[in-house]
View 1 (tube, rainbow, N blue to C red):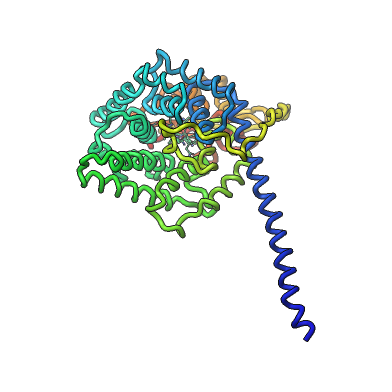
View 2: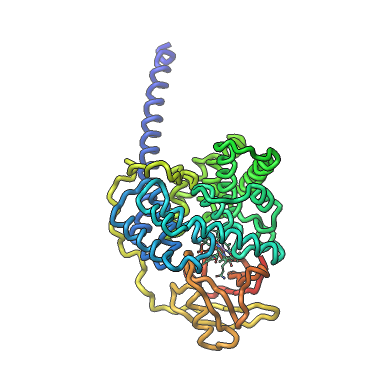
Length: 434
Ligand code: B12
């Protein structure tokens, strides 16, 4: 009998123990997540920005999440403006779109530069050039659909001109430009969802006498693209891969009415991303910049030029530690890898490099051995060095050709400047079509 009376007390005690345990667990969890955010900010704050797109991506993200660091923002703004000044003709359409987004993000004095330099009109022109190229080159844009989506997003947010009928036509989910080698590109689809959502919203907001069929088509494109993004949800809850997940989260945040709650959990994907942050997946500043807004539930659609920048988020109002030296000391041990260049035939060699070397070091070593077989060119981009030609054969967007990098026959998810090679590995650079 006594035991029966004691049961509720025992239950209560257990409840307290479990919930206090849970509180502790969730406190630790939150603390870890805060540390991850600080790690990302550390990368953004302490990186050396070698190109304007990198600086624009960082500035845009910092402004979106409300990091008010005067000196840093000034430095980044200066770099973005310097890059844009007199160089507008050389910028690709997406690079110009991101320049506008970064400078104009949430009402700030830099937006004057956008209007004084007529950047929006230049972007309208570049967007038209992309479309003209598609019309004359078998549907292939000058750049890619990720950038066309950046263009539409910036034009939509900064009152540029575009034809909604053209958007409805070109952004149809069946368009081949959403796919690389037959595989749906989650990054590209996500950027398109953001752009199309903005276009849809601006039609509704301005109550333009829009052709209902255009509205319906845009609506249907968003629905199908969202479905495709969700179908790329992996077992570990990432969307596509770790580097597309930030943009995919943004797309799903702005399109919640297009899927059921049971189809996607923000929290689960967020946890998966945090796991990858702690494993060092975001060392490149542009990677950190692309993931940061999603972690703070912000999207590129929040770049509303008529509202002020959000105040510094209380959670993030913590001092960001000076970056400790994370570069491992150079190792003197040597490793040997197998390196091939594949066009129609395959040329192979063994290359010995220092332990800790990246793919690019291997390519340079091989080039030193035989310039005819292994000579290559590259260009600096926001993600690092991008290989443009090998054996004099140049990648070309009009033909959808590129140099693909692989290890053991599997495409790498990092570039030649970041991927650290291993002893005995089979590395390959292959002439491919996307
Ligand atoms: C379009 C695109 C491509 C196109 C580029 C040609 C074209 N038509 O534009 C194709 C399909 C050929 C391609 C190839 C590759 N890509 Co790619 N690509 C993209 C995408 C969707 C958009 C890039 C873009 O235009 N950005 C906007 C503009 C304004 O910025 P930008 O710096 O001027 O853009 C240029 C560079 O990004 C460059 N580029 C494209 N991909 C890559 C990859 C690397 C590593 C580098 C250094 C540069 C680079 O091409 C852009 C146009 O010139 C991004 C997605 C993303 N989230 O960023 C992935 C992305 C950048 N690519 C990626 C990868 C891994 C590759 C490959 C290494 C794949 C492989 N195994 O071969 C190769 C590059 C190999 C090489 N030759 O050096 C990863 C990079 C991840 C990382 N941590 O480094 C991303 C993030 C996709 C992903 N979610 O995994 N890509």
